[in-house]
Length: 174
Image (cartoon, rainbow, N blue to C red; front, top):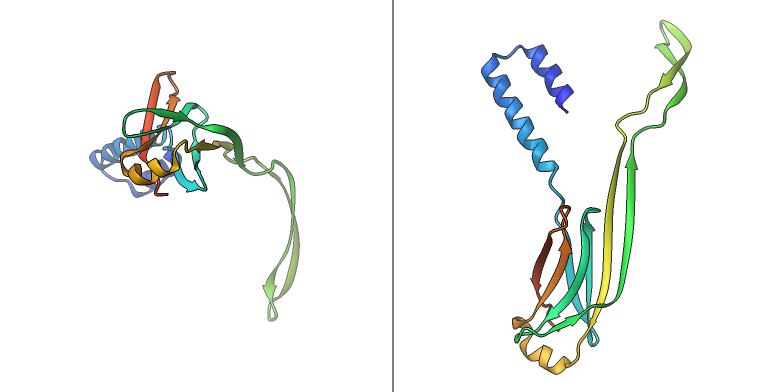
């Protein structure tokens, strides 16, 4: 994007002050994209179990615990955890290319052509994400149903620097 912005600014020939301002804005935008993506946490109650789905987990994060915390602070850890890692790649294929076409029309005649070239590989990016599912059994479903508004689900993890962090969401309705 920086190359594109430079090409546009060069073609337009803006004064130096707006160009410097646009450079600062472009740098600010790029620093925002360097931050880890937020995780998405969803929970629901199925039978006597709270099921969790944590998606879009950045590869630099390591989930250390998923717990259900009741109103008194007692924790019930998740069981049956399953972690799925997904990779998405982009970029074109590199190699020789052949193009076949025609130009012209009915009044000027049709001129067929064959073009040969070499396709260069584009921007090669790979996006990795993780998806975690887990189940937390409810020890006392009646107590949960009576006071679930005071309960919460806590996801503990280590960030890219190895520091312990946690995120909490309200417990789902039964």
